[in-house]
Length: 392
Ligand SMILES: *Cc1c(COP(=O)(O)O)cnc(C)c1O
Image 1 (cartoon, rainbow, N blue to C red):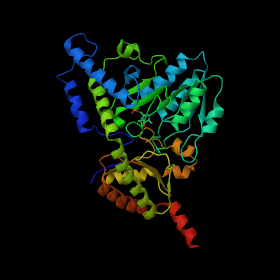
Image 2 (image 1 turned 90 degrees about the vertical axis):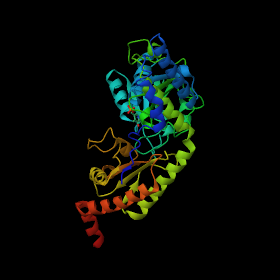
Image 3 (image 1 turned 180 degrees about the horizontal axis):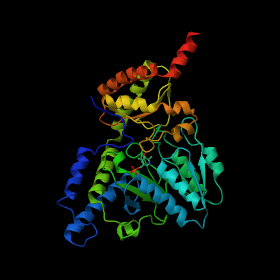
């Protein structure tokens, strides 16, 4: 049996989305910036996509900018605001649990003389709002806090952060890559000035995303060239990608409630069964404000990488932390920020469920997992010590 439980790393392209994209690869291949009919057909498709994306977050079409994905959108939002409004101040507030696309961008800015405050999180993974308020300074120009975490699924108090930012006249950017199609997002009601999304996280194609920029907010350009995207982001339109991004988001939003309910039920069943069947585990992150698809579990006395390899051999794909930090043996900065000891962070696995997972797949995963953890623990000197200490 093959069981894909890594939907937070990426999703496949939904069949309806693929069908919507297909005409723009071959028959309607025109450059959307060309004046002739073929080009205008492509531009019409881009315009329709822009309207659909805007509608999904209660923005205006003129506030939607297509990019190459979440990483580009995060880079553009943060560097763009920092550079354009440097005269206002050079202090940025973010959280300790952001994606590397945000953290590394902030680090780069510190080399240019900016100062960054990393606000801590509660054990649940939620940003400490008192610490966030205390971090605000007269020269704070931007608050960037993710909508939902990619490792432990925590949904942040976005509306409150938006309110705080507005009160202090500070720009507010949110990396909503994990939240799109799952959370009910309204950029106006939530006072969001800039928002990043990525199509391949909601059953759209890879290499396309969006940055929403509120009208009147003017970040510097990141990618310069042609006059595309109102001269704010150069480069020939990725028409099939843009069409796919909009089709995927529209479908995800239309089926949001039913997908969320189904996925949360599977996830909850999985977590409950793991707790009942496998000793010495820790469930990471709070459950009050959490994405329905995320379970992050530390299996004590075993290495996460060994678990992943064993699961993969039996057809189950999961991940340790995020796909971007795997391959490095550093423990996850997100888990450490929640207060998890380093030893626990090492044996942590993220299971991220999707709309097509089934109960049979979950039962199979539980059976393999129970057997795998028991076997790996037999080889673990730490576990042997634990057993010995219990016998004495
Ligand atoms: C996947 C992800 C990104 C990066 O998006 P890409 O489109 O892959 O560049 C950024 N932020 C979060 C929270 C993510 O999960």
